[in-house]
Every structure is written in C-alpha cells, then in structure tokens.
Length: 220
Length: 91
Image 1 (cartoon, helix red, strand yellow):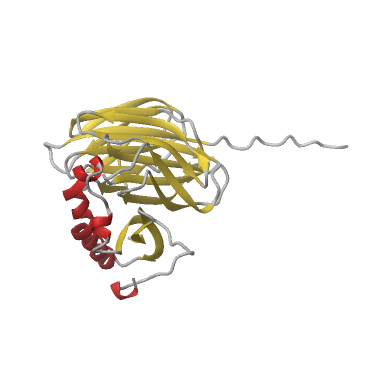
Image 2 (cartoon, one colour; image 1 turned 180 degrees about the vertical axis):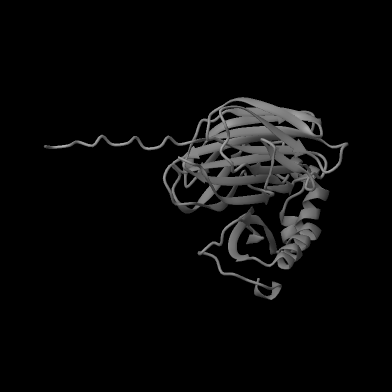
C-alpha cells in the first residue's frame, strides 16, 4: 500500500507558567493511520510524555545537543483517532523558552521505521541511511543556531517541502513523498549560507502491507 | 498559509492558550505575531532568568496587558470548529 502524506500542523509555544503545551491537529481519514511529532526545545528543560487524543505516543528519539543547547526528538502513534484532536506535550517543569513542534499525519503507513540522528555538522550535512524498506518515505528534521529558513532538505536527490520554526534556534522539518527503494537513501540538510552548521535527524515511515488476497473458493 | 489564532491570558496564575479563531490572511498572521513579539515575547526574553529562578512572575506582565494574541500554529487544512477572521478588529 502506498503511503499518503496528510495534514501538517506546526506550533511554536512558550508554555510559561505551564509544564505542558496543548494544541489541536486533524488526522486524515483512511486506513493504517500514523502521526509523527517532531519537537525541539532548549535543554534547560525536558519533555516527558506526548499524547494525541489522550493516547500516549511512542518516543522514537530524544537527544540533547550540548553543541547548540537544544533537545530534539520524534514521537509516533499508529492508528490515531481521525478528525481534530488534542496534542499534549508534558514537560518536567515550567518552560519559559519557546518550543518548536511539527506534526505530520500519514495514512497507509506503519510505525517502527528506522531512526537516524546526527548532531551539528557543516552545511550541507549529508547522511546515508541504510536498511530502508521498499515503499517507505522519510521525515527529515534539522536544527541550527542559524536561520536556515532559506536552506533546503533533500531526500534521495529530491528537494522536499519544509516548514521552519524559530525558538531562538531554528527547526526545519519536511517529509518526502516518493516511495523509496529498498537499501540506502541519502538525506541532506543544507543551510541558507555555506557557513551554517546544522543537525540531521531522520525517521523512516514504512508502508503498510497490502491486504493479502483472499482465496477464492470454487464450489462445483 | 492557514493559522490558528490563540488568546493568551493568565487564568488562576496559569498562562492559558485558548484557540478561538483561524485565518488564511498572511498579513494578519504577521501583524498578530509581530504584536506578540513586541509585547509578551519580548518581555519573557528580557525576564527569562528571573522567571526561571522564580523572582519574576508572569502576573507582572498580565497585570498591565491582560490579553495577547498569537498565530503560531499553522495548519495545512481548514478547521471546521473555528471561525475564520480576516482583521484585527475581529479579535
């Protein structure tokens, strides 16, 4: 089954006197739904749990970068409720720094794809991710101290659509749409200037298996 | 771009974001977020050390400015549960 990349929400919130953030996101209708949330925030605090419609999401990556004082990660949830539902991100304490969040819906997808994580490197930051399953797409996040809004993200040689948020650090996230071949894929995060340094995080979104063909019984 | 507009108020000493409208007007989104940056955003940035240490409280800001808006939740779809606004006068 081919993956459909669905609705996207981006949110930048300063929780202030709260130890959580809430906002709504709409999951598309369709079989084999999946939601992935990419979060980046200051290392002065920490996220604990993330829920969608009250259901706890699975933490796939949480990494603290001492290089740029940011913590980032991916959370995912298979078979989320469709329609508009609340995203809630809980923190260990009140947070007075803005938190960048990007939410991406899929249908025709399953959880559990491969995760890649590399801290800052010079632009273009190129990584080859191996062990990719045929039919997958790739979600790519990069974080930088520089304004990388004018940069680009490439997966398998194709520039993908992205959004860039600024919480005193910059977070760009995009998702490829072409089904990948099995094996390896090159993921490149390029800054707006050649002196930029930026991170490279990937999450493989795997395609759901096609429903097995039913055996036809002939009664004679 | 399509964005959700939140009200930000201090309710029971908690900074509360309430979704109340949406807009697809880029100029309005820019205007709302510029106003946020020059008021609450700038105040938090200036006072962040005191806020984290607990020597400064958000009441000090909200006693002067009780209500702020922000439009930093962007969406790739239209929400059918929020009214569409096109001007600051509707906030």
